[in-house]
Length: 431
Image 1: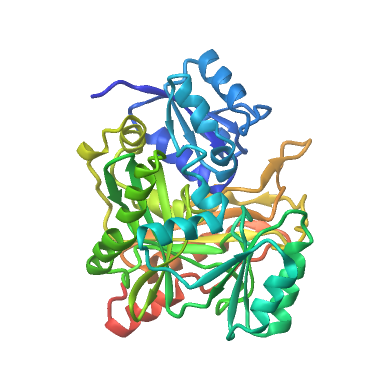
Image 2: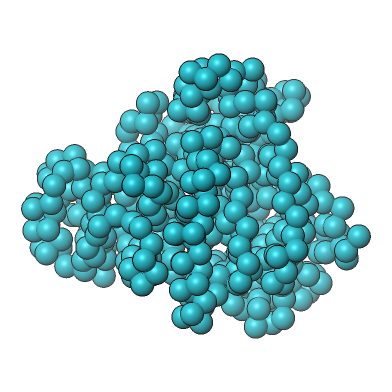
C-alpha cells in the first residue's frame, strides 16, 4: 500500500462533512485535520476552528506545524484567494486549482471568454458593468432572460426573469453593489445535469453525473438556493452524452487553460443544459457541488485519498475509478427563512436514530450551544443521504430517515429526485 498521509481539509459545510467521512474511511488516511469544520466533521477530524482558510500563509504554517502531506480545499473562496498557490509554492501537495484557474468560477464573464476561445457550446450572452446599458439590453431581449452576478454568489446569484420588470429588479439588486459586473444570457431549454471531472493538469477523469434541485419549492418553484437536494447517477446523461460533453466542452476548456499557462488541477464542475442540440455549458464551478458531493461520496467505491493525491501530484492517468451499484439521494434540511435570513438556534436531535438503517446525516450549518446540544447555525443545516438499488428506493430511505430527526421549523423538499423517479416509473425500473 502507498504511504499513509496526514490530510488537512478546508471548509465547514455538508460537502466537507461528506469528504471528511470518505477520507477517514481510507486506510491511507493517517490523520485528518479540518478547518474550521463543524460538529459533524469533528467526528472524523481534529478541528482547527480559528484557522483562516482564505489566508494562504496561515494554511501553510498550520500544514508545516502538523506535518500535513495533503491539503484538500472544499469551498471556492480559498481557491479564489490563492490558497492552493500558496501550498504549491511551499511544496505541499494540494487538491484544488490555482487562483488563475479558479477564475472559471470567480467570474462568469471570464468563463464566457474561455468558451469563446475554446469553441465551447454555451448560451448567447453579453456582459455589462454599467446599469443603464444592461437594462436597455434586457428590455430588448426576448423573454425569459437569465441575469447573473459575474462573481461568487454561493449558487444564488441567478435570476431567470419571465418579465422585463423582473429582469430590471434583478439588475437593480446586482448593480447596488459598487463595481458590479453582470452577465445576461439567453434562457436555454432542457434538463440540467451536474458533470464532475477530476483533472491533474493534463489527464482528466469524469465522475458520475448528478442532478441538483436548486429551487426552494417543490416542483422546482420559488427562488434559487445553494441546492435543496440531489441524486446520482442521472440516467438521462448517457455514456454518449458524457463522451460528447468531454469532447466538446471539458477537453477544449482544459486545453485552453493549459495553453494560457494556467493548467487545471482539482475537480471541474460543469453545470450542463441538455438541449435539443446536445449538451451546452451553463457555468463552471471549480470544486465539488453541495449537495452533489454527498451523493457522489455515497457511491464512490475507490479510495478517495488515492484519487485526490493523484490529482495533486499529476498522476491521475494511472488512477482507478470504481462505483458502487445503485443510486444515492440527498435531501437538504434548511432552517426557516432560508434562502433569506434563516432562523438559527433551533435544537437538533435524532441523528443517531436517522442513521440506524444506513442513511448518513451530513452536517452543514450546525454548532453546539453552551450545553453541548447540536443547534442550527446557518441556512442549509443537514443533508440526509441514503442509497438504494434505484433513485426511488434511495429517496424513500432518505425520507424515512428524516422522519426520525427532530428540528423545529425545518424546511425541506419532499420531491427530490422527482425527474428520475418518474423515469423509473415509466420504464418499470423501480425496486
